[in-house]
Length: 228
Figure 1 (cartoon, helix red, strand yellow):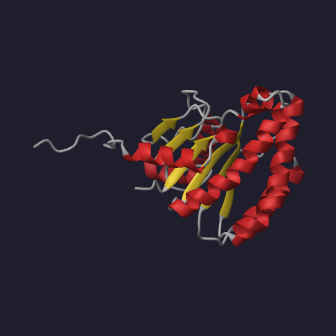
Figure 2 (cartoon, rainbow, N blue to C red; figure 1 turned 180 degrees about the vertical axis):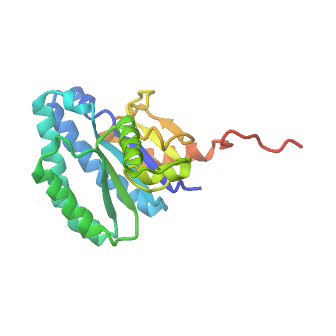
Figure 3 (cartoon, rainbow, N blue to C red; figure 1 turned 135 degrees about the vertical axis):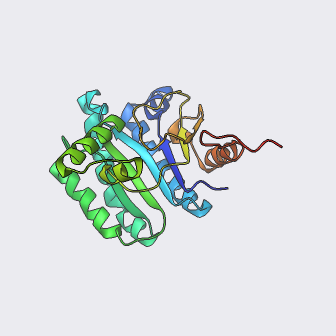
């Protein structure tokens, strides 16, 4: 069984670089290269939605040099991969706040989203300048502005950043056992898989290990299986 939607907390770029006595931005650069391999493998495996945590609302507190490097890497990634996404039938969406993001980068994001909007293969969701609490708060404010009453679980979804299905599986690399403010609303019943492998080393084989572990889980969504 292949999860329809997989979400990944791509952690460990900085440590990957430091372990090799390299500057941290080199780890982020290698991490960006690995994304391309995982997108292709996920799509070939039958995954329909892939979300990655690229830059959180808390990451602005990092040193300016590192933040600037991350922005530059994302800009170059969009430029290089735009035609590949179109060719490979990948639909790009970028979810998160626009505050603090340069007009140049916002323009590049918008162009690739427009270019790929009619693609119907894998939907690639980059969570950028994203925070789970921020998404919920922004959603609540949209509800207030709309004047809508009697909000339910399902009706609230249209006020979130995107309407893609909840992830069945969340993968976190680098061995840290925390969610880090990622998709807090959406992962209520997601299975969580943690590996010590750092993100730049997370290859197709490691991806398949996560899928195999997912298939070993007993997913009951709060209920119990029939006892005979």
